[in-house]
Image 1 (cartoon, rainbow, N blue to C red):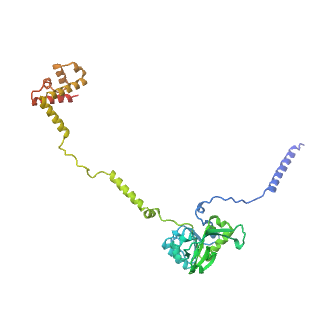
Image 2: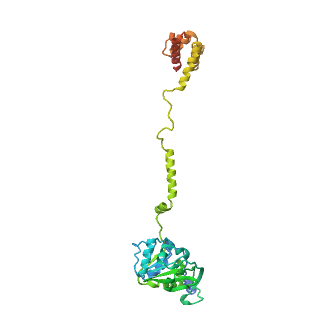
Image 3: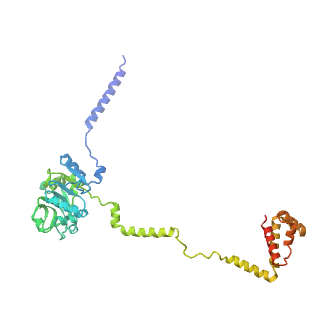
Length: 373
């Protein structure tokens, strides 16, 4: 009995078992997270991660690019996070937001440069900022007050000062009244305003860190769970046509004048710039007639008659070279064949005229001969 195939099968099976056992022995399962570029709304919405977090916590949140009351009906208990420059808010919206805060709303925003922000409509309506400028500073925020935390958030910006009434109502702050604040939450009637030099802790990748998350919940704490959170990550500007009319009217005026000038230059004239010469004047014909009368008076028209005869004969010899050898009656007969005139009339035309009437008759006959092909 040949057992060689059995041995080969056992060796192959042992090899497979060895490979499978080695794979499961050496294999180690790991989860690796690869960061990728943001896509979709996450590319332009700085509060996208914050909104997703609030949604998972069943807290109503809405991201907007407008302060339109129809899309953002602010009610007492709501929270407004303003991520754009407060200077872009007009007087009407500033008055509406200030009244909403006093009725129980919570506004979170960054003043930017305090010496510039104090003159904006929103901060004039709130009456919080002191125009006296403070210094630039930084501060580290640690999780639960633990110092030396590697995951600490860094808060940097131009510190701001508050007016005495706002300082007296401060509930939480980073900084002091003498050196200025990096963060301050102050009461305003029934509502509150949180001023933060930098909103990066709530933006984009800032929410990845646990310290930033804890600080973010503290920022949103006053009305958390009492209403909707509106995240305004940008404010839409006015339309292009309105901006063009408001700021570009000098250019529009210049273009209108240039277009009017070009149209006037290229359009048809309504009338001549100079009067046309009188139709009854024919200066060239008058000159030719005067020259002819002068020559006629000088020799009775014989020179003019000779020039006319020479012109007719030269043209005839160019058109009919056979006539170059003809003279006298043969020439007149040849001309009579080429025209509708009689030979006697042609012979009379080549004779020197005796008077003005005969001169005119000869010239008319010679002109008719010259006009023939």
